[in-house]
Amino acid sequence: MTVASLMFATSFPIAFTDHLVSNEKGSPTPPVTPVSGLETRIGSTGDIPVGLGLKLWESPANIYLMYAGNIEDARKILDMVELAIQQEDYSRDINQRIKCAIKQAGLAASFIIVYLSRRRRVSFCASEQAKHYLGSHFRRVVMIGSGKEPLVRMINKVSGYLKSPLPSIKKAPLEHIVRAINNALSVVAQSTRDYMNGDRSLFAAHSTGGVFTISYFLGLYWLDEQPPAYLENSLCQIFTECEGEQVYLTRLIITRRQHKSQHMDVYVFEGKHPLVLGEKVLELPLQQFSHTQIANFRRHSSIGPMSALSEDFPLFQVITYATAQVTGGRLETQNVDFNGELAITLSNGKNTLRLEQHRDIVAKLWKRCGKHDDLG
Image (cartoon, rainbow, N blue to C red; front, top):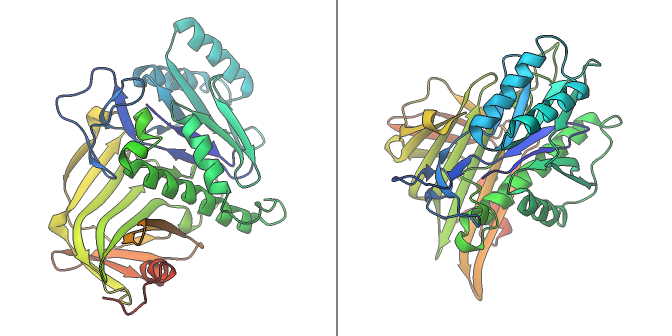
């Protein structure tokens, strides 16, 4: 099942999606996901995880489609869209005709289409199954999929600890964009934490997860100039745990989807690597990384060992997670680090991958948890 949504739909649209594919029959081999590893949790409707797939498709015609439901039917919907825009620009009239055609054909998929209007504005249309949410921290959010109700609760939870509402994009465009990205990443962080927590996960109950990401519509923004570097569709998630007085890195997930690419690269480190919180450079054994490619269809997705990078990899968006046993229970917290400036550079070492922090990202979170920068 799916959660796919368009956040800030009427100001600076950002996609939020999961990547887990499920069906009623299941598979002899459960899928390995970046967040939870081997995934065997059955959804509340009986759906069984079978693999990973993209829920946001980019058409060569500069149309974006998010879908929920039957993937083959979603492909037919995209075919309808691409055929229609050969004759005229996408519009709400075309959208209405496509909805009628979907109903007549009995297609079992819902959708959100993101496109550039005749007035060169990023616009959207959605199927009748879409749920709409309005709030001061996320503006209009359009959601589809079985995970849309858990997403509403997640957005409400995140909104409860966010500060002042978003400023107007007309009066303060840069501040609006930076804060919108931070708010969207906060939903990724809280959703990921929820999904990792086994039976407590609202998303896992709906067979929704695998890995959560946000995506930008780079084919629609800044048409006449290069988009800012911080809008690259990449994210670094750092998972840390404390045992006694020692903090360990236990998982690292780096996702990247380049513009016009038909797949997402996911690099995952699993292990128990001791950290010195004051150190800016971290080297991790390359052999402990895996490389997952998530394609439009799960049968085209793959997982295997990771090779050395072809070039240095700049990361602007980082989420850090901290877990520790404390008196009376378990501490779990996370922090979003995004201000539009370079946060981490990923590069090759000697049989390692080298992470260079350009500011105290991990130490900052543990200091907030009561651990000092000089802790080993």
